[in-house]
Image (tube, rainbow, N blue to C red):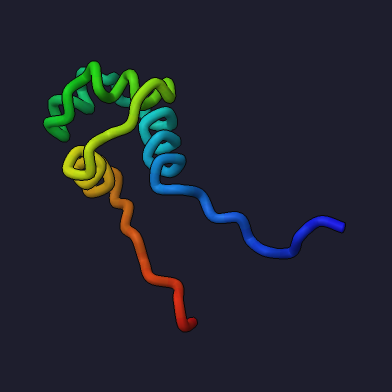
Length: 72
């Protein structure tokens, strides 16, 4: 019987999905966020991770935030 628990996406999954679903080119994302295009490309392909400061810039650009769900 499948688990009834909701599966939460990771921060990495969420950022990667936002980048891949974006209609902006990597060059445009670099210009808008300051995150180097090569880093964006490798992250989007799953070849490398991002530093937290870069992830913060991307999350801000895409309007993403982390919320504490404990104690709800």
